[in-house]
Amino acid sequence: MQELERCARLLAAGTGPVAVDAERASGFRYGQRAFLVQIKREGAGIWLIDPEAFDDLAVIQESLAGVEWILHAATQDLPCLSELGMWPDRLFDTELAGRILGLPRVGLASVLEQLLGVTLAKEHSAADWSKRPLPEDWLRYAALDVELLVELRAAMVGMLEASGKLGWAEEEFEAIRTTPLPGPRTDPWRRTSGMHKLRRPQQLAVVRELWEAREALARNRDTAPGRLIPDSAIVSAAAAQPSTVPALLKTPGFHGRAAAKEAPRWLRAIQAGQAAARTPDRLPALHVPNEGPPPPRVWRDRNPLADRRLKTAKEWVGNKAEELNLPTENLLTPDTLRRVCWTPPEAIDLDSVSAALADLGARRWQVRITAPIITVALLDPDPAA
Image (cartoon, rainbow, N blue to C red; front, side, top):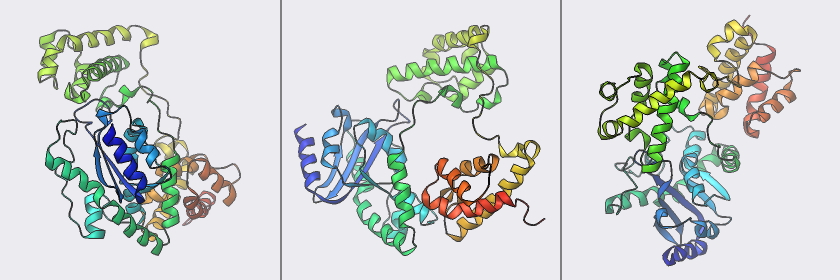
């Protein structure tokens, strides 16, 4: 703890923004927690912190009050940093800045090479960062992820200013920083890969019970669920519903130590799913109602006017994004465009469309650019007719 407090004192005494990164072990351990936190600030040097050794990193958070954080792909690391009591008062995201600048590749190694001429090896990006002790070359690799972020930020600020996009980027960074982290998913088992192949609610009941059994065991063992049995095994078992251990172990995907050793557990889950399927109030719905618009592929039949509006607006917004050297989804998310085209304001004009976009989460700069385009598309969805 003394060393952590010394780190905090030096960070507080440092100058300028702070570069922050985190390494997880999601392919090896349960959950998305950080197993290494890397920090660099001018005057304080680079620090590699093992968060497993502490209850939290609140002392580091306090030392960085009011300091701008630089992260690459902040939405990936902020959840695990939040679990440690860390959250930025100001933010600069180099990955998002790269998108706004229209860079062809926005991975950290690519951006560093494009803007600073530095080649960054990524050989340990998928490593098991829960390993202890961490090898020396892994630690050097981890330090490189923050070593040049301050210089990269400076280069990007200059480019954003020159292209008139700095204000856009700042709005995006603040939106990330101030948006609450999502809560637990409803029915997370429905995200089982390949589940779309199943056509009966009874099969979904088996998927649910197998998924929950795997989740409980993974949590207890602190291992990634997919290392016990893959999603494909759950789907295959739900389709075949084997009734004996030998039959289960012949089901595709049930291979390896965990599949065989825990076969009775998986079989009990299948039986629990079958029992649930015989109880109407425990039978899961085959499809979950979508609170948003239906898939665009059905718009032509269900709402031809909305379909024409979307096609016209999508083309025009895409053209504008190309003109601004932006990915279309960074100018306006596809979901936002679909929603405003499916359910436009009752009275369509620039003010009402601007308000609708803002209500859907579009930033001020996005509204300013896209609202005029979308307003015309909503009013005249057939410009060539």
